[in-house]
Image (cartoon, each protein chain N blue to C red):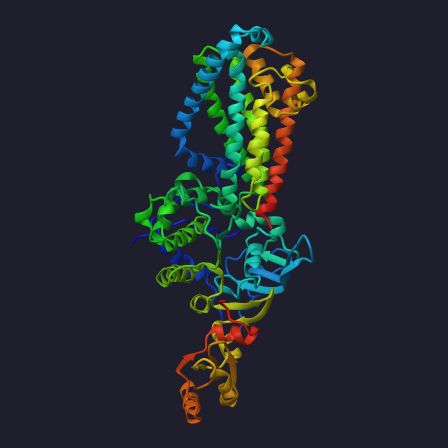
Length: 362
Length: 274
């Protein structure tokens, strides 16, 4: 194989800043990324698949047999193209098929149908070779709690065939990246949830992956820990690592993803950049109205014509409109008396609500 | 900060160590933290058994009509080989039960390994290799204690160590398969301990010759891996048994262990690759 190897340099940041320009592929803003253009340093094409794509899926399906009854179809035919250097997200509620897709991409779950190429290779044939070049951050941490932080990194690096000395060196380098130097010799069971997550991310970087898979990286963390983690992921993205992440947090997707797909019930409901999706499926602003219990139903028909679209949630009404303040004035002028009001920008949550009729986080 | 260049490490120059050995190294690293207590237990336990059974009970056996049915050896010499194999059986099954289950269910470390280039077959092999190493260390300690008591026979008695490892591992690998298949923590391990391991320990010619058992249930001993192990261990330490019988016992244990390894690999693979 002639793929271009990236050198191991002592400092993570300097290493990546050195190669970022070579591997980051800028996505034309507002449009779909070009999938067929070759970039320098990419490996030679294999078969008919475009090898510029870190991930290429066509009609990808996954179903699980169930003892009594028909198979459960977790992924029902999805198409994906992820170019090198992109931060790509799967957004969707629990059970949408995000994790099943991630496991197929990670080469630990054989596909049921369709075609899949990771780094230009077929996971069914070249699982081991692909896994050697991936970094995986699983949904549930699977660190060894009895070993020290540093030993966890060392052991994991060894699985990739990295020699001992290089492994220790890399571990120290990544401890710095993950801001865990002080915890280097602490046992993992003494770490906080956010620290464990950072360690898991550091661990996934031991083999200098070209493609980093993050399955719900910040689920269950407090806001502060999430922000620290986003900062680290953002750095990786800046340094040219292709990031694939699943999340059911819209703010996470907006912060990190160049492009994302909204998944629902095993299918892709929409695809684009966060801004594109909001523009396409929502209005600029949203006016939220809360009423005293029981008063909302009476208000519904009266606001129906005051906005481009309304959504009725159990506890509030959402009015989609280009100008929230103006709509609020109209609402008040019409004699409606909500107990509280909020004008905000549209988010991916609104896109999701529009596409599926359901909230992201239940 | 000036970047310092480190040696180029790439796919093209991996160390040659196989995944099996890497998993073994990992498990040894974890074990090393509790090694001291294992070693102490590995010496104290045989001491207690040999004192209580070998000498305490042995005094009665040797002075009564029992001595003749043991083939003319003292009870402690009769007992010692079987204690080594029985200890390996217990330790092996113990190591293959909750610790392996935990690596799937609680610590989930096997899931982490499965996302690296290490294959599920290598995870299975590495786990078994580690288990065998532990049994070898435990059996060696047991052998030393037996040696001190003067019940270890000649040089051939050293062979009791690999024999005990084979006996323990060929049973434990089936428990590994069970641990890989279990989705919920039920009573399966307790059933194995109470209704398989304990009866096997008692009725495999460990403490008394199986000829003392009623003919109708003697077949239980014949299908017991521990009986085959005991026969081999006595052949090594006491020089009993014909060459053909020894070969038969070996084949039994190797086939059992081999089939168990295939089963365990399948269990690990279907668990981790879904």
